[in-house]
Length: 556
Image (cartoon, rainbow, N blue to C red):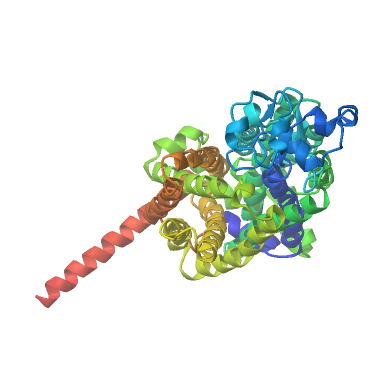
């Protein structure tokens, strides 16, 4: 393969790769904060109806005897199903008889109540302001909060569909730079949104850019790195998401107002946009698409940064033409999305890769996007998710090198599925055991993300890599949208959601065993490269079978 030799000459793991990794992974940490933001900005605070007796000083002045606030609450707000003050109803008239210690439920259960026509009073002890309190997304409007989350995830899905093909056509760096700017502008605008529909619109636009950043970050790291160093850099990229989980919890703990929190995680992308112009375009993509002049400039630039100026100066247009003649002449027809679906070998890879991405998004976001439902400290829980992620992703680096991509991918999906399924057998009273299984499952899902990020890129040629990664991201976001909806099955049986969350990754992990192994192989540049490898494998297999037959005949 020609390009790995060129990359070795200019430096496949040097100062440039280190600087590039830092420049690309720093935005990933803030990107994670955007993804998990609504665990905090969309948190539902405790709330009750606004009532004059409690919340209007003039009305309180007219009450003789000045009852305690607890007494006023009892006569103004009925009890809910949990025997706490109702969050969505209030008495039409104060029920003073309830202050009688001999009063029973029969004395007041038939008292007329009404919705919170004057609004709500929110508990601001944990969060100073959330979008729920800002636009009263409670009671009859409570479905609007998950809708905002679904709109955000739909934005990532649409962005993946558009950015994958756009990056293959116009380049990785250009789409990445635009995505940084769009994230900075849209995310900051969401902090000043005057209405809920505008907030959802800006969050959709920000989510659109999330897909462009995630896909192009991984692809640039992969295409500027040698085969041996690729798992290390891709694992470090994946660890950026883990650090982002911790960062999200820390920033949200210090910034309790949703608008300021939204601004805090969006403004850094202006800085990312400014320095992204320094990043070089993928030389592999430039040469594969016939842009030799610019490819030569980028290779010489990387050689200079890596301290190999002489090697860079020795590169000429003739050298590039000689090295890439096979790629430029072997695939005269432009690679398209249909190529992934029409070519037999690529079709299988595409379908299974999308299934693995779907399983990750479905299970992870189904379990992790509703931290409040876990009944714990959401700030601490967010940090712990990131902390557990680190050893899981670091450990998978060893598995990828020793066991290979295919078994590691299968194991990283089957294990979390089994952990989730095991939780269906553990009684709710054994909280510690359930927590250990949940943490193990989430950690394994982090490892699955690292595997599919590396393995998915190695399965496809350069001319179609971003398109294939885009399809994978679409599948992941489709899973993320469907995942939270599975919780609705809990109305028919408390274990049903866990059964679904566990079965999907187990089945997807088993199908990953049908994929070819890519450990130690250079990245393919064209569809012909893949077909050539398949032909070589078939020839070797046939030769092995023939040799075995001859040996048997000799023995006979």
